[in-house]
Length: 174
Image 1 (tube, one colour):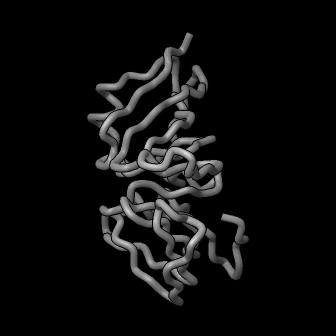
Image 2 (tube, rainbow, N blue to C red):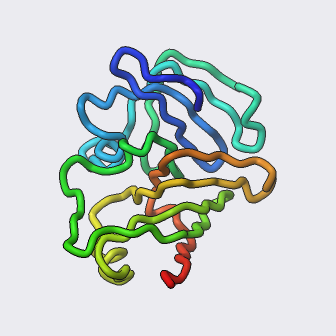
């Protein structure tokens, strides 16, 4: 998304199985990660919304002043890097952090991105079973429409709906 933040609103691209929804979100001193992972709210309020079909992102099929977007139906959101993490509960480790290249399969979309691993190694069972976030943060991502591989979406950070991930692959850390 090329648009800049205005009057306290942040420009974000949201993706569902059929649509790209671009709009502004009022974060109210929270991150987009905080808002998407907030279990008390099922919807995200958007302003100045532009809608396009995922297989033809250049054609705007609708523009609206306001919209409510249901979080459970989202595949992922593309956000500025600083918006990916929750302000409460950031992980730290004596051993630092490293990036691991990942490949994700979602309905109609595949994503290649870097996943930030805290500590020496990634414990999949612990992470996938115990993580409390509904949305997993990735950086330096590229999403590709499976039916039209020439259509790609990229961004600093992706927030991916954990329930929409069909396959989560990680490259070897060697």
